[in-house]
Length: 139
Image: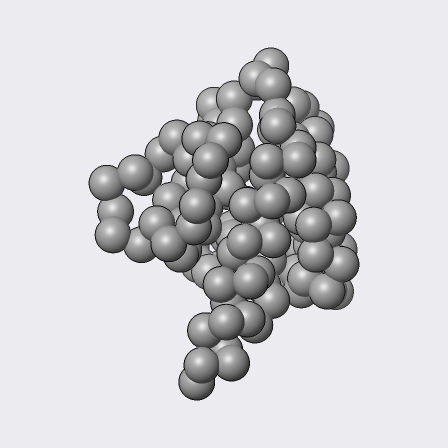
């Protein structure tokens, strides 16, 4: 699907819906599942699509609550969920498996057929929201 195919689609939620349909494989299913878990973890989360550019004409799915919580990116072999403040989050279940060397960002790469610890992921999302809320109230 080209960027022009998304014109007139409307809201970010509809754009993400269209992206999931376009994928039509395990990556679309995983992105849809992650999206549902994000919404379960925080019903007040806001969906957006950002960073639309020639090299990424469909943009990136983004979830925010008083600041960026995480992104959902789709690649050939992984669906990547990136947390911009991941290095500041406790991860007792060891979900972070990518971008571990960064000072702030942490990511989780999901591969086809891998098990997903839904409760641990929802806890991580809630922790990211709590961090944003505490930072917002401190300012």
